[in-house]
Image 1 (cartoon, rainbow, N blue to C red):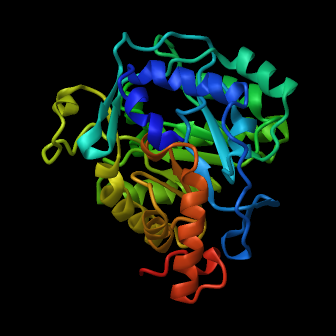
Image 2: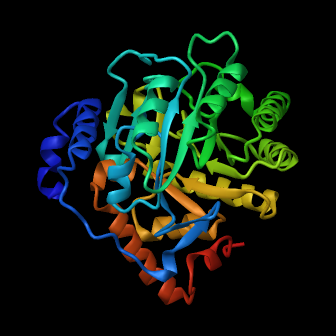
Length: 346
């Protein structure tokens, strides 16, 4: 069905089309799909078994409106957000752009969010029927960004299966300063101290930029291990890598996602995998639109994967498509389970 109406959808403004997709998911207007289940792609994390390692990345369900419908589409896990302490509009529109020839998007949304209180209330009234991550970040006009992360931690630690510390959006000025050794160490020290004060064991993820250099990979890895961080998400969008793009929208300011990010994120996943020595679980993101692209993330070191742009271009059946292709690939490669393939490219 999606292939028949895609051309009509793509005539709409991308943000309007996204809003309509959220509304459609809210009223369950998508045809009900049987979730593809196979032992070879089953995996588990934090004591929960997942049908597959495929998650929807933060940015799709920013305000936690459709996480349960997304589980019904077959996603193994869902990450909502980025959620900020207070509601904010984000950057001025237009702020999302399709690059069709490049199978990519550029966005400069700027953490548009309904705010922590409304998102908390929504999740509390409709408990997730699967593994739910909550991605948190600071308000644009915040005078203390570190405190903003702590506010969100205090708000969500009881209802999240994991919390993602987003330090990697290119659309919030100076947010990526948290990649610096001193700033990241201070941030994570404060997060862990607050976890101890709250007496919670909620796992913490850190979402990093695809634009970090090798030296920074080593430093970030050391700090994650030092603070016993459980997850790293590699990676967010990039504000670089425009030179080989075709669509005129490549000139727009913002974060680039989709196919042009695939090889960049694969290389970065592999670097982190070698530095982390299996002490931190890697979630791989960037350019996933097929079983093969998902498999490449896995063999480079990702235990789980996330997508967003792939669904924009291929529609809601993408989870079953990738799952089916992954099953075939694993069988041909002789892996009984996807967990056995993690990091095997090394």
